Length: 270
Image (cartoon, rainbow, N blue to C red; front, side, top):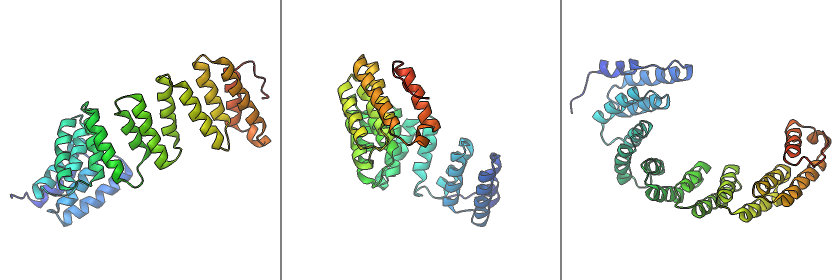
C-alpha cells in the first residue's frame, strides 16, 4: 500500500475547522495524536466522526478515505461511512456499506439500526422492520426512539400499535410511545381502544388531571360530547383535590384555562 507523507495527514484537518470551542478543543487533541502517529487509521476515523457530528461532510469523507487507505478492514469504518452516506441522502450506498459491516459482525446493533433507517429511507419498510426487530432482540435497554421507528415501518396501524405496546412492555409507560399509540388508535377510528388505554393510564398515575383532559379531548373530537364533558368534570374534580400550592401552579392554572376553553359550561375557579 502506498502511504502518503506525514505532512499531508497532519494538514488534512485544516480543510474546514468548525468555529465552536468544544469542537476546536476536540480537534486540537485528535490533531496532536495524529501528528504523533500519522499512520494510525483509527485516529482518522475518530477525527472523521468528529467532523461528521459537526456537519462538515466533506472533511469527514476525507478523513474516512485516509483511514480506508491505511486499514480497509478497520472496525466501525463502514458504519461511519454509511452514516455519512445517509447524511447525504444516499441510502443505497449506506446499505451496501452496512451489509459488509454486518457480515463481519452480525451482532453490531448500531450497524443494524443504521441499515434499518437506510432501508426505510429507500422505501423498503419490511426490510427495515426486520432489522429493527433483530436489533431490539439484541439490545438490553433499547431507546424508546427505536420502538417509534420500528412502529413507523409497520404495514398497518394495528401492527404499529402492537410494536409500540411491546416497547411499553419492555420500557414502561414511556410518554412518547403512549402518545404515538393513542394518535394511531384515533386516526384508525379505534376510539374505544384509545379510551381504554387512557383509562389504564389514569388508574395508575398520581396526577390524572391532564390525562382526563386528554380523554375528554379525544371523546370531543369523536363526536361524543356527553362523555367528553364527564371527563372534563373529572379533571376539574382531580384539580380540586390538589393542595392549594399545586392548584395555583402555572401548569395547573394553564390546564384550568384549557378546560374552560374545551368545556365552557364548566365553572372553574381561577
